[in-house]
Image (tube, rainbow, N blue to C red; front, side, top):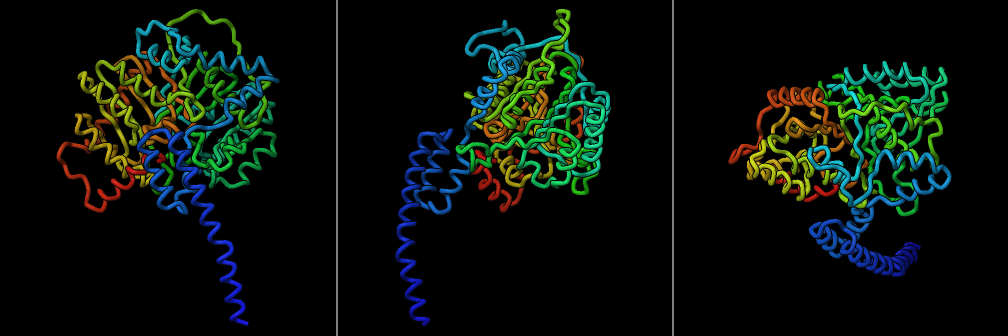
Amino acid sequence: MQIFDSLSQQSWFITFIPPLVVLIELLAIFSAFHALRHVRTSQAAVAWVIGLVTIPFLVLPMYWVFARHRFEGYREAIRAVGERHVQSVASVRRELVTDANVRTTTLDTSLEYLADVLDTPLCDGNTFDLLIDGAAFFESLLQRIDAAEHYVYLEFYILRDDEIGSQLADALLRCVKRGVVVRLLYDEVGCLRLPGRYIRRLVAAGIDVRAFNTRQGFVNRFQINFRNHRKLVVIDGATAWVGGLNVGDEYLGKNSKNLRWRDTAVAIRGSLARKVQAVFAGDYYWAARTDLPEAIWHSEPDTPSHSGLAAVCATGPADQRPRATMMFASAAATAKRRLWISTPYLVPDDALVVALSMARARGVDVRLLIPSIADQWAVFLAGYYYEQQLAEIGIPVYRFPEGFLHQKCVLVDDDLVLIGSTNFDNRSLYLNFELMVAIAEPKLIADVAEMLEQDFAESSRSNASGESLRPLFARVGTAIARLFSPVL
């Protein structure tokens, strides 16, 4: 009997395994040709082709999950919604988009240059409050949520069912009881650890809760590599919050792992809030395939003003151009005196390294501020490579010593500030939906300059030329991590 079983197993092996091997090889060859045509950089295309040809069993599934950088269907979803809600979608486009390849400003300032490069409109008459760290952010947000009259829109990458998460949920439940419309978008990957009971509690109370769901549609079915990394709140179309903070106790220093999560946001009042609302509306169209009937798109005519000039910089993998890279490159191109960048992750692409090099060559004070502890080890190790690369061109990198530095902030001279969710890494540049606000308001710029001066004063330079930074095993890890930088 055992002999027959053995023969049966051999017959099965001979019948099915060779055809399976041939099929995988054919799929790998097809994927290699696909990589040559569609992968963003030639270096990455070569790496994928070599891997697909030599070890197809391992690399083939990785290619179809991680290699794509273009998100399909987002624009089409907005177009489909527009066929049924023409006025609503037209309002969103008016708030977010100017004509492509057409100059719409005088290009006299850094903000105008950036707005023209990104085809995003300027708006004025805004006021801003800089919110440093979680206590200021959540106090401002929760107070205003309790005063909401018509609607509250929220979009976060991470939500936690902890103390501050419960406070936010309670505030939203109070809104619903007053008849205020509440809509919440979250990223499925970012909220993998969020208990289902948290969402069920909100939905049961009448809150519209939706996952952004990047895996919608056949083409995106296996694309778990895309994320909606935006963090924004809009209340009544008049007030908005944009920054780097998610909803979690770690931003209040209540996380046992890291005593302090250093982060920054900005509270906005004025016409820029409607542009942030338009970003939420586009994401909501994708998630829900319908409009926001209660949204206020028109306010009382504002007195013309050149104060509080600002623009939104909404970028993502549905863009036809590398707009996130263009945003940072624009800041570098217009800097005359200083370009200070604070970011939790340092994995820039080649274009940004060149842009920083050109600014430094003009004598601009270019410096970067990053954490001294790891949040994601692969990204952390890859950052050491770029630290040394920047040191060779005279750009210092400082490491923040207290807790985990999570803020995403750019200061250009005394002319422009960018605050939001976009990290200085390939994931934010090409794979994530991100949001920054670009602001040219003197008081906010002065506040940000003072904040960054304090941050740099608390930090120390970590990439001094010729200095040995780490032992051999860490240098090996850095080299390996750098190979995966396009998907970090």
